[in-house]
Amino acid sequence: MIRSIRVELAIYLSIAIVCIIGLLSFLSYQSTADELGELYDANMQHLAETMIGSDQIANLATRDDAATNSAPSKVRGEQDYLIQLQQQAQVIYQSHQRAFDVNTARAGLSTQWVNQRRWQVFVAKRGTIICVVAQDFKLRQRAIREVAIRLIIPQLLIVPCLILGALLVIRKTFKPLLTLSSEIDARRADQLEPLSIAQPPDELKPIIQALNRWMQRVSNAIAMQKRFTSDAAHELRTPVTALKLQMSAMQHGDQAALDHCLQQAQGGVARMERLVHQLLTLAKVDPDARQQEMQSFALSPLVIKVLNDLSPLYRKKQLDIGFTRADDVSMTGLPDEIEVLLNNIIVNAIHYTPAGGVINLSLTAFADGLRLEVDDSGPGITPEALEKVFDRFYRAEQSEVTGSGLGLAIVKEIAFKHQATIRLVNKPAKTGLIVIFEYQLHASI
Image (cartoon, rainbow, N blue to C red; front, top):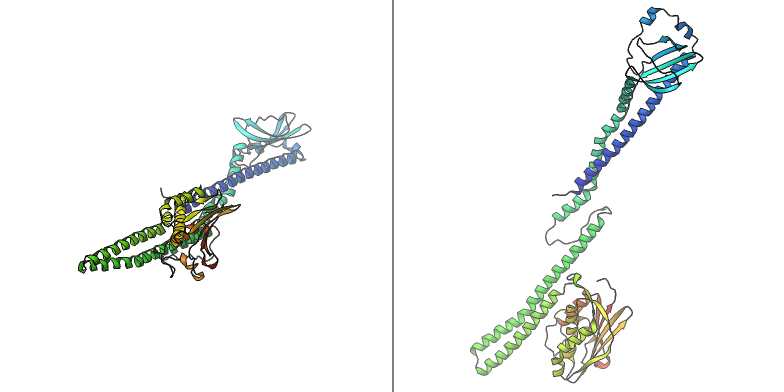
């Protein structure tokens, strides 16, 4: 079923207009009917009091039969009142030639049935004179109904006008939304600039802002993908070319040259394998991905696990590695990605620390966060390279360690995703490097 907010709004507004106008018309009808009824009652009372107070009542009893015979027999309208005068229980005057036996025991207004017809009756008394003014109730109600309907018809006729006005207002109100839709439809697939709508309504601003944020994320993701593709192509080109040259040399060399080329080819394949693995790891560290998988976990056991996994490396170099402080701390994030971060930091420390060197780890808890320090006894880094080492494929010029230059770039991406910070500090006199990882607790990830 296709739903349209505009259609639903038009339907609901139309129903509301019809109900409100209908209620107002009903109330107007009731009010008009009551007021007309009171007006007719006042006229009857005035007529009765005028008749009974007239000095000509005595002459009515002696009028000739011709005048009596000429009186109408039927009440022909709501303004045609039946008037009857009685004196000592005898009818001395009646305006219409018909039997009209009414109860005059109680003065004032009353509704009575006479000859199977309903009448509105007003009885006035003065001495022995009784004046009865009666009005046909059916004719009276018909007249009241006709007047009331004539009054409410204009109210009912305004309903279509109000509905049409509501439809025009709805159309104008939804115009900014249609404008936004048209602008989005007109864009190319690669056109991800922020939307700009002149003076958008307040209700549309959150949608525009959300779309702009989403397009910024998509733009960043596309830029990251393009950069990854470009970097991967650039970095893989060199080892592939080297392999081709070594394979070509294998075809024309002696056994010694063949063994040498084979050894170099194996080293090139290992470097290419490590490069591909790190490229794939970097590609998976998307700042917006896996947000729903964030969880709280203890950091100390994860550091110990990484140290156990890397034990062959630091034992081979006879390094002294361990904790100088290990507080019980927890953080919220993705344990597998934090494990990659720790692995890259510690592997770097192992690679750049000379044989027999020392690597100290310190895990400190604070009221609002934690800090992990990895302190090695390597050569350190030149001051101008402290920030550059976080760039992809950057390697310090004096470095003798083979690598792809992606390890710290991956560390930076993971830290950024977890709203943490990573920085490097040289120890005095080139006695080593300290890697500091800081995380704020209760950060909105």
